Image (spheres, protein in one colour):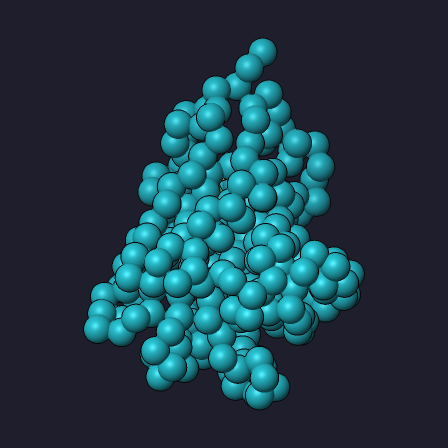
Length: 258
Ligand code: 8X3
């Protein structure tokens, strides 16, 4: 049975832009019911209209800062009745702050990355997975990174947060043995999103240099992979998928032209 047919209910965190947004659109094209959340609600309102136009069977948009454990519990434990049975959770919310030597970096940057990328993922997982186990259906798709496979200079804490994501995905899969709930880690390399703009706090020039003279992945490339893993037969669990553009070998090796 394909799990992405119409009627499947998919929760996507960090849905307002980049990979989260592209994933919401990809599932909408398949007629899914979508719960979309991000820290701010305004960008989700326009997205909700686009998702409906694309074919989503229903859309429920709400503001959520995944790093705020109490807000996650309050919001996800009181979803409207018709939105409680979530079939697919895409733990996409995440960010990077700074490209700095770890021994010089502002601890506030560490805090924000660990709170969102590690604890945020755990908070949402903790709120959603027990009902998946109870219902006997579910798929958790976590967003990792090439950064979790290979640490690069000046990115220590971001890389550590993605290495943690990989360990959490593995551990969650082990803890779910004996249940039909699947776990996948999708680990992209460089994707052309707001990622670098956020990392450099809006410094467009620095952000542009990251993708200069290479062809990065597009958010839709990653969304394709997410939809593919979710649409395998229910006895097939894709544990992880490492995806880069043709111009990226690993965290450090890039084919910059010119
Ligand atoms: C994003 C990939 O290499 O820019 O997760 O950190 S990288």
